[in-house]
Image 1 (cartoon, rainbow, N blue to C red):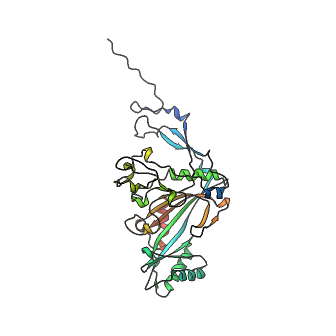
Image 2: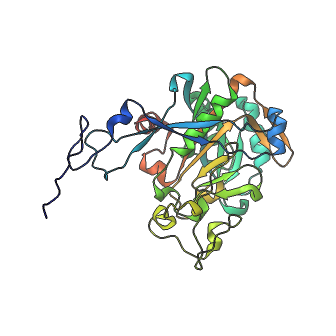
Length: 349
């Protein structure tokens, strides 16, 4: 019996015999539609007047890998089919916290009022110790300019019983994407693109208090994006990962195995968090970096009083906030106001 002849398959340009990719996709790429998922909440209808859209999707092109990529055979890449020219981006320092110490008891409300009257902007005075005890505090101002911050440091140093050397305790940088046509649909798509393509180093969110999560209301409407199965391999989307009884290992992504059953897609009208927030991030072994992504439609929200400011169409935008404190500021060598320009250049890189 004769041996069957080996039939050579045709090869496309740029294709090797050991790694055959169908480069026909270059001329006619397939596409993948990923629909946006919304939480149909009362707050959404109050803000937009209609139920959430059902026809918004991100489009990805199904393409071969870049030339020379050492990937497995038959593997392709998904590239967003997204027109960035439809947006205008802007970055700014959203707020800054200056640390100071007191010799005795501090009336924070009185000091806040005194500083506001002196510099003309609101100043939030907050303790650094849990429960408001202790003698270390921070003064926070929004949209700080250099002149405004220098004036605040000078005024704090002049207060009786206070000591302020101008140490920066926390800083938040915001990056905003404005839709040039002021379209809600374009803003939703950019917000979705941001959170789907953000994956900070796991060291920033390994602790369960900083695990990737989506919130679209109170604590009952918060879901972790990745869940860890319990020891009996059961899953419950209503549970938080820490209730599953399996500690996180060295790599949370590996532990979760990226299985679909371990994944909770974020709500498009929710806020996406990576890293610990607020007071929890100021203490303990947290790395001092947190991220937040949202479609910013309201400002100055106070859940206690139920007040908020609804932004005009031209002010609404997709936003990413990066908050740096403690170890993160040390890594960037930021401790004083003069250190900020070099640090911001490093962040931009």
